[in-house]
Length: 204
Image (cartoon, rainbow, N blue to C red; front, side, top):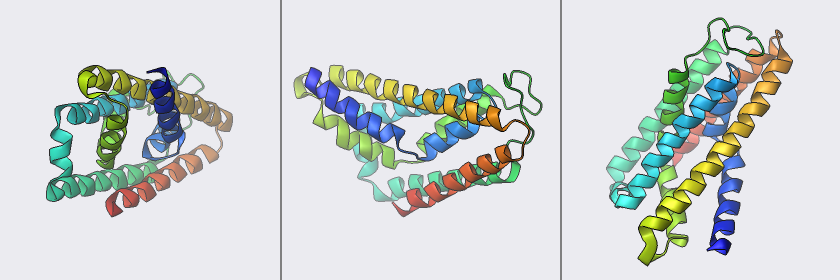
């Protein structure tokens, strides 16, 4: 079990640190405050619970074996990412924020960050294919329920640690930028990256 755990952690950590829509989203949230980035991370974790639940109940297999439904979700998800990227490019971070960002002007609500985080992850149904390919490699038939909970918890722990790490990096970066225009340049670049990721999702 220890060997399987280490292998699972190695695979999961490698995939989590690889920049994608979730990483770009968390970096953008850190422009508003560290708390916004944490709220966004909680949204990502919520969507992971949904994906893992679909795998555990067998509904994920039904979804992936129904091309019209799966592709429909994929295109809807891609459109959402394009919409999110467009909003980021258009508005940037609106105004410079203070270091603590507790009472920053035109701040962003934590609920908004949480909701966007959840939808950002759910917008890519290919994540379900990843879960369905990865988990069977580590779960034992006689202990399926136990193992799915165990490795699911490991997956979400890795996600949380990696995203919080990116949030801290992003927060330091935007604090360093201070009142310069580079903060908006960076945030709009992140928005462009999310749009590029949207096209990758749409292509399948």
